[in-house]
Length: 202
Image (tube, rainbow, N blue to C red; front, top):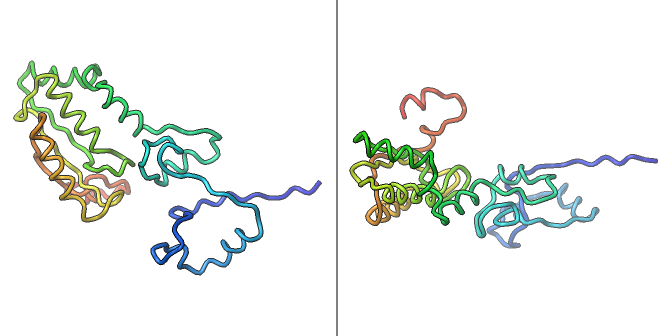
């Protein structure tokens, strides 16, 4: 019996899209891929939203795609689980979150919320930050006790979108608890290549 070899090729960013000039793959010269599609059976898969364990309408990304490859089932992502926790008011009763807020209240301390300000959904989502601010308000904290330090994205979102997220957050903070305190780009604040000179600047 002849054993045929199978290759699993992961081509990040490659997908089946519109057949027009906006599609870089369509415009590229891809003779090998064209041959595979013509000579072998093929199909397409959904790589975003609920099909890969994300909230409906949320774009996919490489991490999510890699987790779902070969799983044979939907691998539900943390993003959806945290979304649900925010919607269900779980932050208002979570012991770790509430203990931190209680400590700040009882000891006249400040709470600093530090993280990515983005709806890219890869490492964070603005919905979760807003949920924490709402939970702080529910616990009795005021805006002069809660400070937000934002890492602006520009990688999982448009590079020029930061100001829009800042304005959206500032508008939201008027309805809840929290003060916008500082901002920095993720290039410095979220370096993962051991480039300590960047972290030092942050």
